[in-house]
Amino acid sequence: MDEGHNGMTETPMHIVLGGVRGSRPVSHPDFMRFGGATTSVLIDNGAGARIVIDAGTGLQTLQPHLSVPDASLPVLLLFTHYHLDHLIGLPPFAPLYDPAHRFVFAAPPRHGTTVRQALDRLTAPPFWPVAFRAGQQFLDLPATCEAPYRHGPFDVRWCAVHHENGCHAYRIDDRATGASVVFATDLEWRLSDEAERKDFLRLCREPRPLDLLIMEGHYDSEAREGWGHSRWQDAAEVARQVCARHLVVTHLAPEADDLTLEAREHRLQALCPHARLGRQGLSILWQRGDAGNV
Image 1 (cartoon, rainbow, N blue to C red):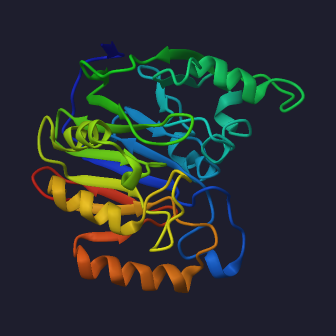
Image 2: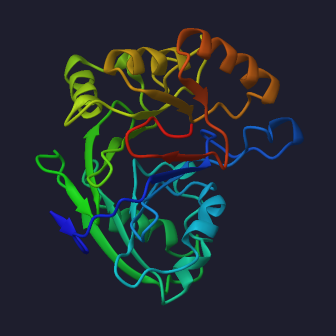
């Protein structure tokens, strides 16, 4: 599968975390060091190929990186799932009302719901009054990833993870530089069955060892079983199993203030030295042949 041109560049992979909160946004001075916006992440090759995963309120943080349209390649917007904290930034996103912009909205079907059906519901009256004016394509990815979807120099792979109403993790590989990142949110690792764990570990290990794992760690030791989320300790264990070079823990609990999260990050780094908690606006640049700037 292929979208757009096949040209590859030597520019580094650039990753920006637009929002790192889970479940609901937070607006309070005690929460601003890590940020209060919900999930959205940008992967950019610096030469026009851009992928956004999820459209929480953190999508607004990413707007400066997406304000200039590219004539050759649309922005690929992947959805892990359709819970509102991962979608709520989409309707007010300014580039969607500019005809010069183009977007491909993509996801595997979940419980019979396609990406177009989900977005049509989100923006239908009485919930939203204005239609998008940007160029739009809707892509239903296969339920099982038999071959990567190509977006410019990026190979996109995915697998289902354990979460109510369905959810998918994504892996992005840059064919030009060899950089790789897996993004996994809303994943309840401890309730995942053997097949779900096997599929996710394979996503992290193939076709080559993983550079960066961005995985949710909503809970500390007080994880609520059946609520669809993992502990930061689970993320550290997965990173160890797949030999990820770096780990960034995201989907941070909305009730955890900066002091709580700083203490949690110290505990995480005692277990996994090449790990940190995500922060809103965190920029990661992957240079050829090294682990990048995390």
